[in-house]
Image (cartoon, rainbow, N blue to C red; front, side, top):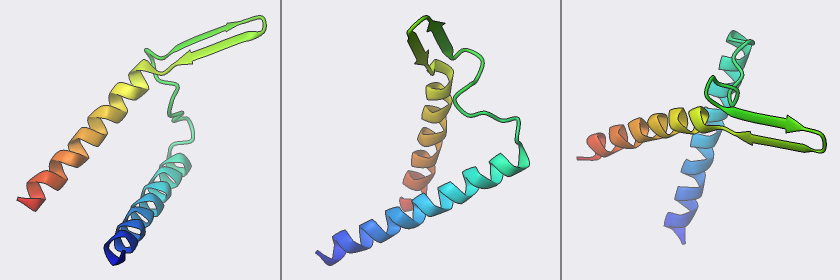
Length: 76
């Protein structure tokens, strides 16, 4: 149970750090709108709204892949 508690604390710390980074980037670049990148599809009609963040998901996937690769190379 102690290992689970440590993992929760580590994940919480990582979430706080990521939140602070995102908050700081928002203050530095107020025109940067995550989730509204070119290539994202937005369809709006009467009584219907659909948003498909294709480009945002690709960018997020690349960032997470890079982070996981760094963690893996550090642990070796």
